[in-house]
Image (cartoon, rainbow, N blue to C red; front, top):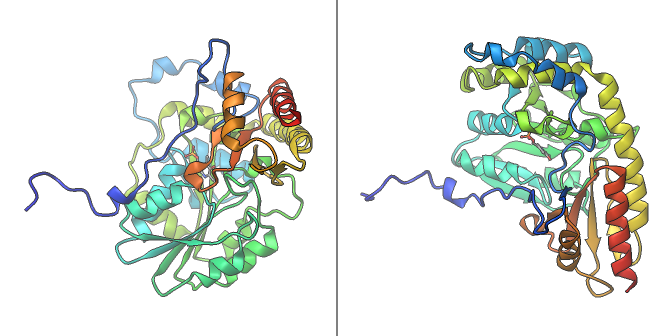
Length: 363
Ligand SMILES: *Cc1c(COP(=O)(O)O)cnc(C)c1O
């Protein structure tokens, strides 16, 4: 017998998630480009929706988040009964893993897939199985090739964080078609609001036609990261299972009020997409060159690969940026020590990043 409580074996295999740094070690103002937050702050309508919240603090929030779900259903053309809201999409991912994964089960994750997937998989006692990317793009054949009789779930971030690359609608369909019916395909579209590619699909048609596909979304990248709101569109049976498992009051009142207003603020969402597309294109073109490779991104960030032998390393570039008050994300935890992930921020921030890195590179 152990002399103290011992967690389930998967728990201690989890490498703790390392969030993006908030602060540079300098006296002047920090520019945070490390967590893919909104480049334009929050929707003004979401901010206004929080007025008067103080008077409501003694009441429990709506346990079914009905105002927020109805707004999502209307704006995105979805059925409200197939929507579930979570405290960030991280909670949705945990709920999916707890409901559908256990000891002996496997979940397939792409080589540079989002780091929460192995965390929730291990937390549920199951085993993450990694499928190789092809030049930093999810390889559908490798994902399908990793399927065994133990496979219960496949995680796909589309576009993917941190690579920024995506699978088009046909490739997404091909991935789904190749999976056994008992394997749940989790399509995580955290960056859908920023996509500009015409052949992209969030997969709503797949969710509506099949029992084994869910689409997961978040408000965190569109201006409400502080409030922790994520959501999922899925088959009724899966939504029902998660509703049984979740905390009845998982979405606090502030999140419900601001979230509903943010969904309905279509103009702000469009402004985010336009601002991001402009500066994503600009910064990518500025930095892409012999010693620096910028992967084509559909998110609100770019992944910058440094060819160490030809110029500076990612570590050096990170230090130079930090000394100028700019915080970006180091990628060692993703197995990408030669890369930095840079969130798209204000135009002024993007110009500063480009000027610093280009200046260093010439020397
Ligand atoms: C940021 C991110 C999320 C999670 O966001 P929450 O803040 O928990 O809603 C989920 N998936 C991917 C791929 C992300 O990059």
